[in-house]
Length: 305
Ligand code: A3P
Image (cartoon, rainbow, N blue to C red; front, side, top):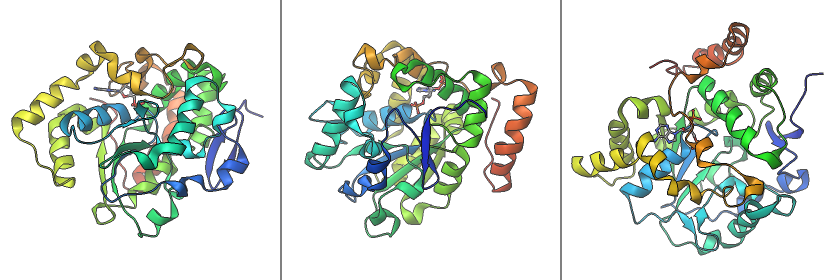
């Protein structure tokens, strides 16, 4: 049997044992989120540029509340599913604080989430309560590479797969948040009518300003050319790398025990770094299992720039 990152499947999504407990997961804990129509949620599969988008949005709209008062960190909604008692250090404390005090956070809130659609709250799925969701996707090869490097830095997660094992685990969906393909195809079913705007990392790389114009339009909050230019400049890879303050807001950075350095968050920020990692055989396998399936479903991504 291939080596695996220990975990379990529930409703089509993989949950690593390092953070999750099946009983907590089964209780649909995210139904506790008090969805508000003015909530703005950045929804991504991990390593798709989440913090770039959060940084852009919070710089553009300073009235959006990003930090949880109890912990002064950014709210990741999928922490509802995590068993804070099992996770060490500040990470676990933040998950607990998030569950306890999210409802006290003033509106409008800026939140983020990595969950596949099927684990999203029922009230949202049933259309009873909708907030605005910005779904940001990135080509799966660069995601796979970025995710591999990132997980190697989270020591307590116990992800000890080598690159080849990781590629197979990624394709099988046996990584945190499950299958990239299911995630992207699951969320792509929703569009503007359901309050979901789709954008890509590659479009942001090509022309961040045009993506922000779409976002501003979606939020019904237009911004001037000058304001957009300024924010794009301040949130460029170079600017963010020089001023790493933003990354202190991530729940897992505060103690060495759960170390994820800003270097790992802002690693290369490129389109096409996968070419430095994938062997020909791994690339063919990945194309067969993911890229072609995504394209057959109409999801074309940019892999070179
Ligand atoms: P790499 O590991 O390929 O460098 P997330 O925030 O979802 O965890 O995504 C992290 C990825 O987004 C990292 O990719 C990171 O470098 C990239 N990223 C973050 N800010 C960026 C920016 N301003 N410009 C380009 N890429 C950025």
